[in-house]
Length: 208
Image (cartoon, rainbow, N blue to C red; front, side):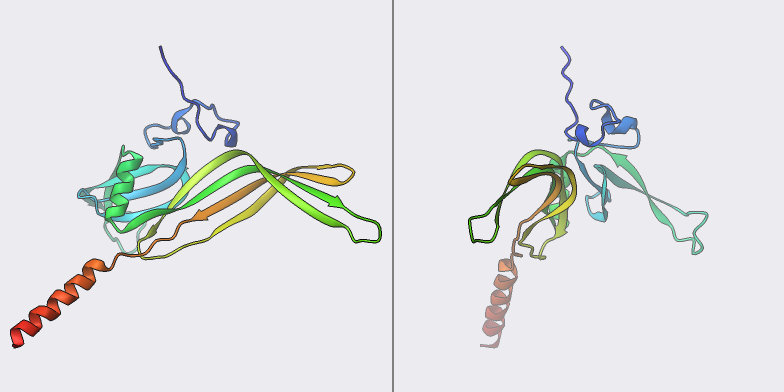
């Protein structure tokens, strides 16, 4: 029995089959979980050489140790030669953490329905109350930031209004909204502090 999994971003690309892997280009692209992410360039020891944020499927490249010179490069600067490789999301996460990065920003594109209700009493001004309901999540992205950079906020940006429906006392809007969630953290300086204390103790011991 064969089980086929539908791409979680199928609604975002209606012109493409929901069962098509890497947009029909498995030789050049890798997409382990069907979500949009970034490009990662590592050397053979796992050291991060370059990290590029984009809206393409996950791609991981490892330097072969060879270099090449682009013919159109006026300075003829040798560039590393990379080979694309398969790497799980957990492996990418581990390598990025080892290189001083942490995945802390989550961005969701959602279809959201907002209802605005307008009421008025005699001899009073009109008042409005609003409520929102997420109908479905279209896309989820994660971004890496360097450790030590603290972020702690959440925001939503309405990208476009898909549909508006008017009733007697209300307006119902169906929106495509980008919701960004940022999680803060602090750099661990415990080890550095301990090293300074040990140095001072050793220095005092050497003097006396």
